[in-house]
Length: 261
Image (cartoon, rainbow, N blue to C red; front, side, top):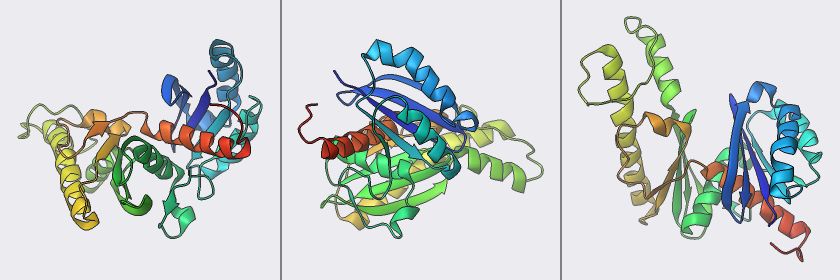
């Protein structure tokens, strides 16, 4: 069966996945600093192409680092498949009300596409990464927009900078809400504060939307949560990569309408 390669280039880490029939077969990651595509393309040739049965059918890329996108696309094109960059012109038919359209990050577009693919419309995608980002698709299937809030690392870093007595701080695993030390207090604030924040935001979003839209949670910051947000219906660590793959496949299907899946 043909497979799709999805690549998510973040500010610090680049993640990739090979998907078959919408299911993740294998995943990997490397620092974005070396993501000009050479290491990624070479590694994929060695580890994936032979094992998965030839070149990918499509390659999708969501990149929030503009300087990386051009060289990466050139390198990935060497795999022998069309390379689709997620953006306003490539979003699997998702209609967006975001203004201006190009200001919406490709990872956020991919999250909305994947959430709609999973739940239909309306739906909500919640990504706890560098930022806490929320994307809202209404009942007509239109990406209405969303919201942004500092992610775990950004919040903890800001707290350390602004409060001199705290010194360097890291978010650890919270075991209780009432912390008995500075480290425990920060862990509790993050571990229990973000689930409460997410629940509160989702309640307000659903009230404004006028619909009980299901929500899916993703992002590396989820590992710092001490409790699961009660207002979230599903977790998917590969949500963004699924959305990238869906967008690449949709673009490829438009170019080759008679090609089988």
